[in-house]
Image 1 (cartoon, rainbow over the protein chains, first blue to last red):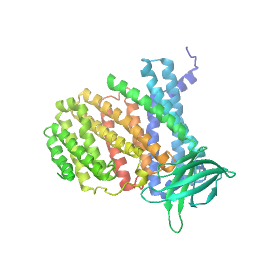
Image 2: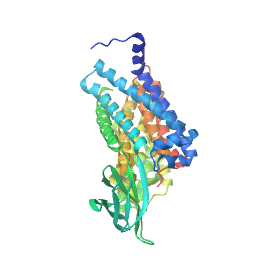
Image 3: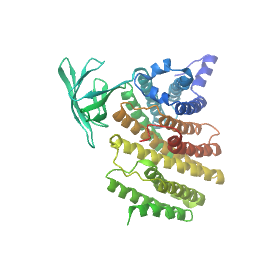
Length: 238
Length: 239
């Protein structure tokens, strides 16, 4: 189907679908992150604030601009890159240049990249963490409305803890926590951070909400599928 | 024979590879046998600290060079560069103290092993890409630049997979697939840099010298991400 554009709209579309723009934006994003890494290294509190408890967006809006400006800039450039990526993909599909795999592989990669951006956006707005020490046999009321009961704690080479998640005294889920083995319940992840046996058996448990995680995983699957296809194609072509 | 002897044996092999390329494979085999024996002794995949990872990097460089055997046969300088790189990484590895302790519980997962293994395989392919770029800039044979592209593209794929494995591991260990630390930021910088290279190469006028140079410079970003960030910037990757 032929699109009809006025001159200005056509020029804008050409700019938005341009590979040159993608190159500039990727270069700019690289430079911004480079500056960000220096700011981060010189201001250790930045790392803590960015990976700490409340959503990153809260820190972005309340933190000192001298420390946050680079992340704002990175988000802006990524937003432009996302628009450029979508436009490039639309234009490629519209032109139907090359075979089906040649046409689709880069678009699948682009879809994966965009899904990962969506994941980061969701996590920036909604991710949160809550960490606390819970003695064995104690119950903690969580802001999400249900209770966490620490049934048993074991230390040693493989520390672990048995937990129950309850609502109004009814056990909804039982699970065993260990390093790298969280328990998931209603979108929340429960993580064993530490175990102490003195002066009384207790566990440091982190409750984490990461709304972007499923989207990041989906994006990773898309990206990998597209990249494998493209690598196979390109290595043959070149 | 002491397993450490295998690691030391790789050094003369890599030096000899400068004269005869087949010694690269001998060095690779010696280091692979060393890592295997260390793995059996420790009861885990030995991937912690600069000693293990630099040996893995050197062995991977030598191992992946097999895919470019024809280029090595034609271009002696390429074999010399790879031999020199593998030798240098091996020397630094032998200067670093091996980590013999028990694995911290948070590292005891296949996702960690996959993350580190894939990262160093990709670094090796980026290293091979850099060497091919340097040889292309010297010789001007277009086939070399195409080989560089293939190497970098394969490295990019493995590096992306390493990032995904790292994300899954981080999610299972710390409840988030992304940690905001300088190391993670530099991982993104490295990934973006090679994304830039791959997009640049699609642009008219970016085949040949410019692409070869960009591909070669990429390995400096790799080295800074691997060694520089650890030395200059505190990160969650310091265990």
